[in-house]
Length: 334
Image (cartoon, rainbow, N blue to C red; front, side, top):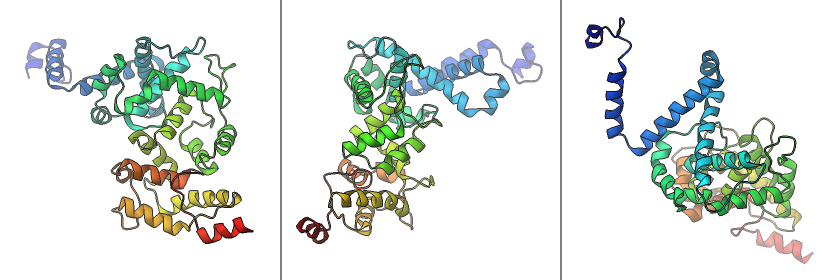
């Protein structure tokens, strides 16, 4: 009614700039740092989206709208890395290195595999994002933010190149990793089984099914620290083969069966899957009547139990191996 009396609106749907600014300052006064930063991200995202897309395109294409959120994170990553005493980018590959840091910031928030995935204000708040970001500017890396330590960023890049990749902002010079390369390297290192690698490329890479530097960095971070929340969210998507939001007995058995076949080639008989599954269920105690394991239930486990489950199902060789002693000893004797 006041707006109409002032003549600022004929339909009551618009407000004066002064009124909006008064509301905005009041909101900022009571908002948390994460709420303020998240709102800034959203505004910048929409501005950049509107500059690159028409209105109809931005409304009909959620993936492209989410892509603009990546550009905001890249700007944040670029400014953050400039303050590091150790140079983390490469001449000719600066943008790829900035994209890697942006991807790792997203990984710190929720373990999201794809850069298009939008993070939420709740993720920022739960991870104390602003305080840890300020600490990172002073090169103090705490909690999940240890993943963006400059030494870790250099490690991701070095490992990526040692696996056969090449970092370059020139698309003709850059070399990404194929599924075959990753599978071969994992097999040589006796780490992930081929089925796990195939699942990673299915859910954690784009339609081209290759690993660029950013994708590899998330993969390496998740493999290096299996107990972290980000790693659990990363590997949960790998184990959830039918994409129903749960890890079922069938999902787990498909990975364990391949692991058994590989170990049999080495002359090692692993115990029956029913024994392993019963141990996993006893650790998790799933609430679902069909013993379906939810992500929240994995996140509630202590670190050693998280590591045990992932190693038991996805890794060819681990420190928790359970042998069928009689059958294995017979093969060794023969």
